[in-house]
Image (cartoon, rainbow, N blue to C red):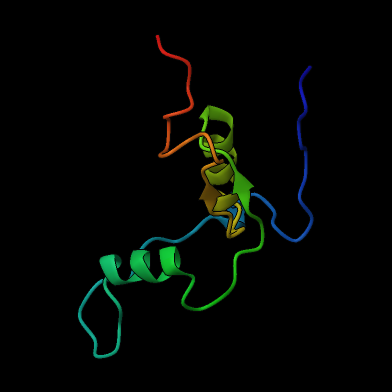
Amino acid sequence: MLTALEELKGHERAAGANRPRGTLHGESRGQANWLDECQAAREFADSDPTVLVVGAGQGELALSARLGQLGVAAPTAPSANCTRATSCWPPG
């Protein structure tokens, strides 16, 4: 069975005129660098997560990454039997 989401209203795909324009170059006071922005996003310093993805398998990590591309804060929480990301994948 395949479940697919075609649209998430309010979080449209960043394409065409909605595509990000790039980074701000140069130095200015008060401007956070890339590392500071990543840490603030990881700690949800500015906002609360919108969605919590439970599990750390391939599907859960892909879903969390795709929602992040759409601007939805979606952290991944490993389930009880997974101690870290990818630990619940079957051995190859």
